[in-house]
Each structure stands twice: as C-alpha cells, then as structure tokens.
Length: 365
Image (cartoon, rainbow, N blue to C red; front, side, top):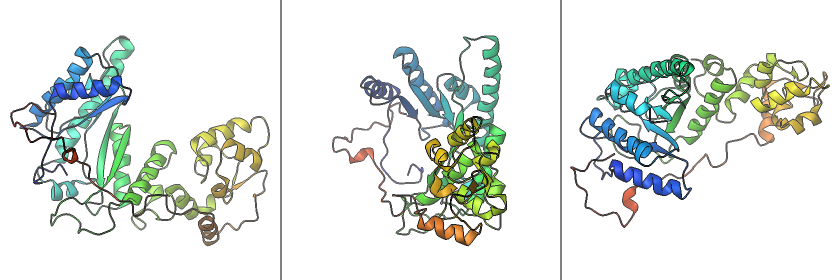
C-alpha cells in the first residue's frame, strides 16, 4: 500500500500532532502505548530525525510513560538509531520479504545489507547496555523490550520451510524477540506480484506460520523438525505440532508420569503451562486422565498420544490414518473465521472530515 510507486493519496503527521494524538488517547485510557512508523520522506536520516523529535517530545515535554514501539528506517545513520533506541521500548526493522531474491524482485531499491545492518547495531548496543546496567543500575535503558521484524507472506514464491528457516536464523543470530508475519494483500497491479484471485490474503498460511513460530520460541522445536525440502509447506488441516506428531508416531504414546518436560511439550493438546503443571503435580502422586483435564490438557487431541499408568484413555491404534480420521471427526478442522475472511484496506481518507489542505513542506511523520 505504501510502496512509493503507488499512485495513492498519502497522509502524515507532524511530531507535535503525533504527541497530541497520543496523549489525548492515553489520558482517556484508550491506549497503553504507541506504535510509530513512517515511509521515507526526503531521506532516511530526515525521516529518522522526525521520529526522534516525536519521541523526544513525548518523553521529555509530555512525560509519556507508556510503551513505545518504533520502526527504524533502513539507511538511517547509526547515531540516529541509537538516539531513538534510548527513547523507545522496542525497535523493529522490517525484513519486508523472507529472501534477498524476493527483495530484489519486488523492492530493488532496498538491500538486505541496509536492513540487517541496523538490526546488528541494535543487537550489539543492547548487549553493551546490559553490561552498563550491571555496573550502573540507573543507566539509561536501550530498547529494553528487544527488537522484532516483519515479513510479508505470499508476495513471493518462498515455501513455509524457507520462511521458518529465516525466522529461526534471525532468532539465533540477531536475538530477536519476535518475528511477525503479514499475509500479502493485493492492492495494486504489478507484473512481479502474484495474479489477483478471489481468495483474498493467505490468512490460514499466516496463522500456521505464527503457530510454528511459537513452537520455535517456546517448545524447543527446530525448523528442520517441522518441515523439510521434501515436505516444504504446512498442513492445511492440522496445526504444526499435531502434524509433527502424526509424522513421528514412533515417539508415542508418551507416559505422562515419566516423560520429561521437553517431551511433554511435544504432545498435541499439552501447552507449556500444562506441561509445567504436570511436572509439579506428579511429584505428589500418579496422574490420571481426570487430573489432566483439571490441569488444562486438551484431551480430545492428547488422548491419541499419551498413556497414564501405562494405559490409554480409549483403545487406540497408533496409526497415522486412524488418528487423522479421529482428529478430523473430533472437529480438528480449519480455524474459525480464517477461511474466506473479507478484507478491506482502511484509509484515513475514508473520513469525510479529512480536508485537502496538505502542505508538502510540513514536517511529517
């Protein structure tokens, strides 16, 4: 939508307008924080100066104590990015597309280096700041909530396997707190983009990637365990963990009273909170299926993969086809409201009160 070649009306705010809007909403308890981003005006440094001006006024003049997530502008000077980092809670640099090939095809004016360089700077500065805080408790904090990034999904032909490999690499090499995935929305015609279809944005694919991302961050899975070059995309019918379990039935059934924490995390229907509760509860005695239900285990999924005291909840064949049929009969189908969800790009220009008095020389964010 914000692509510079798009012939669409654009809106922007001055730093003072950003401050006024933020404080008006904050005082009314409508918001808890601010997410601030911008297209490039004149140059990356000029735009970053405007973002810095808005944040500096919010923190110093208005004494805004809420959460601030700010987008770093690729190509901006390292000094400006550092100055902004001491005012924000979280900073992100959009990766835009999963691979360098995709970036060259759709955004040839952007380079992978310009995107990864500020990411590395933020990572290094966060490490330095951590050391400073151990020496001086009241030292200013640099991006205390960490950094994140975002990828557009479906605009280029990467597989799910390639995408989660990129995400895994970012978590390991840049210590990102979060990778966001945004389903591609067709808003303009371009021969380099996928042809328009009536299906809308790939929201189910986005949903599966978020589920897989959660497994990478909290469930000790590796990208290579979830997908492979031979099987490069996620199952439409099952979430990634359930699909992994169906493909690795040799690991099951798991005895709830003896399995270690990491193995419990791999059982469909057992979340990380339930796994912690199981480990704690079984110190007091042997657990049965009634106990698991009280703990919060989703038994309609878990019952095919676990035993309690050496017995399964019901007689069950440990066969992929059998378990698949039963899971589908139990309602293990597509997430609600994900398929055929309508989409419309919201616009500031929808507001009939929006005037045409836009001055190009205004300082805008």
